[in-house]
Length: 115
Length: 113
Image (cartoon, rainbow over all chains, first blue to last red; front, side, top):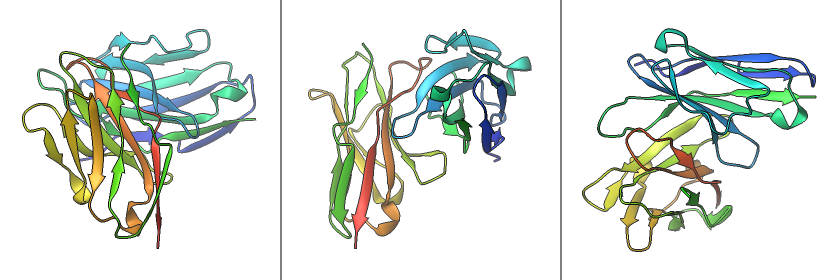
């Protein structure tokens, strides 16, 4: 089966600019996650969707970050305006949902550099 | 608070030697545990998972982990490592079927020939 697709793979922007990342989860996966992975650290959950509803966005900096999942499939994550500390790899993951928990399947990530 | 701790940020071992990567989690009634591997410039790949049942879990690439409820640990082991095992390893925990997956800070495994 096709994996989680993310684009772009790399992005370089100047601080105060805006940027958007796209994610297409595995077909049939109801749960979608966006993680931020700063160099040398573990992934930190930014937002979790169940279909097109938000389950957890407690660690999303809502003054500059936003995310949506239209029709419960694809998702976009936006940063506006970007700061230097937003430089990180942004990972999208998806999983089946319901009853027994299953693992999350990850995309290759988008490496963002803010200069 | 829900958390997972990886005590070692780096573990250097010689090729063909055994290795153990340590992971501890904050206690809860029900817990689901995962180990992921991340090769350079790639996404995370699942090595193994514990959901219930046998406390010894076998995964891909010869790795295994043991769930120890009394010590709230889920250490990853391999009896003989190869150069190709060089990567970053992440322990992760979920506290219910619908809750978020929380990751540890990672352990970098470096293999010396």
